[in-house]
Each structure stands twice: as structure tokens, then as C-alpha cells.
Image (cartoon, rainbow, N blue to C red; front, side, top):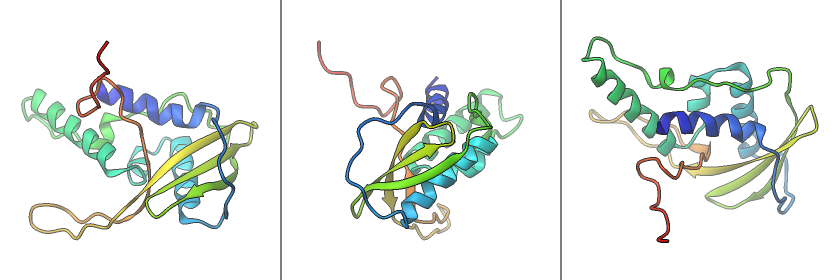
Length: 163
């Protein structure tokens, strides 16, 4: 179920109108390019492309779900992480018309995308360091990645406040 919630968050990130705007900044940021790429991959239905630009913790959750799904079919086949997500509910006729960097620090950025239908969407991004691979783990490119909020009921989410 956590994977379904993650898939819905991917779609909602492109469909929910933007909230409060922050400080205005330069549009020539790499964070802006990543936000545009995220939107373009969602528009095309390119799950692998989307996974390449989302934060590592989200990718790890999808990889874990794929491992569990592979185990559930008794090892008859290996289910790939990209098979765990489906991009649905994205209007393929709507494109990103403009993208603006609202704020940026060394580790976080916020980008506002203006869609061709006039809606505005804000994406939060995090800076991830590159990881050099070895025999036990693959190399990972660093750079700006889109942050996907963890659903409240998903494993690893913060516990709900006491009532």
C-alpha cells in the first residue's frame, strides 16, 4: 500500500496547485532543470526517468517493495522497481510553461512550475552527494533530487502524534 501512496504522491505533485510562494531567485539553477525533468518524465509516463530524479530514500522504498513483490511470486521472476509504479492521472496535454527558483540553500531548494493551463506547482528538492560504488553497492550520481513526502502510514514515516 505504501507504494500506491507513493505513486499517488508522484501524480499529486504535478496536479495540486501551489501553496505559498517564497523568495524569488535566479532561474538558471540546476534545481530548476531537475524540476522540469521531473515534470517532463511524469508527462511522458517515464517511470525510470522519474526515479532518476527523485530523492534516494523514495527510490529505496520502491526498490524494497520490488524485492518484496519478487519474494511473493516465489522467485519465479524478478520484479524491477520501475514496475512498482504507474504514472496515472497526468494530463499529457499540459506542459511546463515556466519554472522559477523560489529559494535555495546548500541542501534544499524550492521550484515553482507554471503549467500551460495556468496552474502553479511547487516542488521541494534536496541535494544528494554522489556515492562511489563498490562490490556491495552501486554508484549513485549526486545532485538535486525531487523530495517526495513519505505517506503517514508508510514504514519509516514519523509516528502519529499521541491523541
